[in-house]
Length: 283
Ligand code: PDD
Image (cartoon, rainbow, N blue to C red; front, side, top):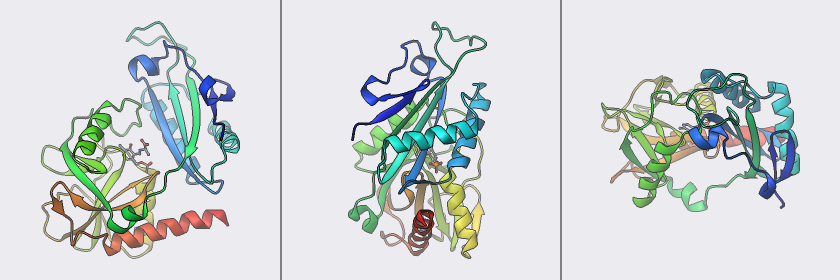
């Protein structure tokens, strides 16, 4: 498929879609982004993603380049031009183009880029065995609630993940609590309850995290939003969530197995309930 991207007011073939070398996204990572999943032409939680984009822009004082309705329309159009069965739409907003200076010019015109790619599906092996994760001391900044394009810490984290033959890395605070992954939120099942770190400056408010908590509560799974550690007695399962993974069981952490090393009942059922909701989008 010839991929088409939106850049600053136009749809163009991907290879012709360019931004200026003095774009502040390129020079300072001065921007924010969203990743949105689309199943058989239906977007999952499009509005909450766009609202989070707006919150991220507001947090760093970037003017939203379009209204939420206009952005919805553009995202739909971008999908129509790249109509994968299952797609992920990437939206990036940067502060715009200016001669390089840390000081921000007033009245800048933000850069808006939208691209669409096929949504990768997990392999049969991953679904059967769950994923392997590692833990790492948190080296990120103190505003992880902003979906910033400054992802160097996560890139370094993922290099370590790959060196150690794992799939995801979870950041630990100074006391050993699991915060979130390089590109996922994380959860444990402790004494039968679904436990996840509270939303604060160390955690992105994942749209899939919200969905997982909502589905859990609606299906009689107790939820506890509190800091947690891998060493807690009663911990039987771990899992992660993101737009690109839905809910995915984590069965190995560092050199240890979680529970019996197989995807556990709560992870399996949450994942299935979530996939049922995706399926229902089509109807
Ligand atoms: N990452 N935490 C971090 C640090 C993330 O980067 C992400 C998403 C999440 C999960 O958020 P959501 O459920 O809204 O996708 C949590 C995206 C998918 C990415 O960077 O590609």
